[in-house]
Image (cartoon, rainbow, N blue to C red):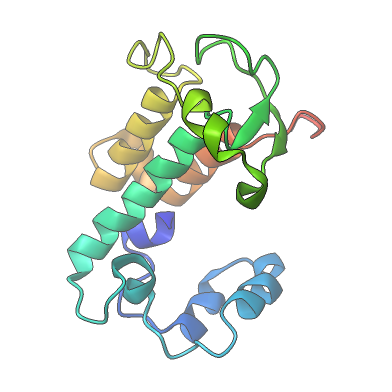
Length: 169
């Protein structure tokens, strides 16, 4: 999604060409996921229609990234160290990702409740507002990070999704 958001993967690119833009380690999974859909354009995945405006697709892709950031702090999607903390700043690395099909619909809303510090974030905080702002800044090209958008966006997402059992870099 971040490559679509920043424009290095064009919305009108067929899926069978996208694989050439991915790291070799991702080729097999990508081909399995999109087998039989190679001629479909990337924009259809985001816009849901073949009649899409490229800039709109880029905005939807950025929105998909921001949604991932938000969900990564939700106890209904991800179990983190200190998951019961009433604040976002107190949460740690990922213990496990939760399977959507196994979620208890009655508990989902409670687990997605608004934390007390939902809007209380400073630049550099491990917080969805701060991480989202970094992604928006990169995509908009208005920050120093934008010169290395893929690297910066990947760093944000990897820090967000780091698992407790992973070894530090």
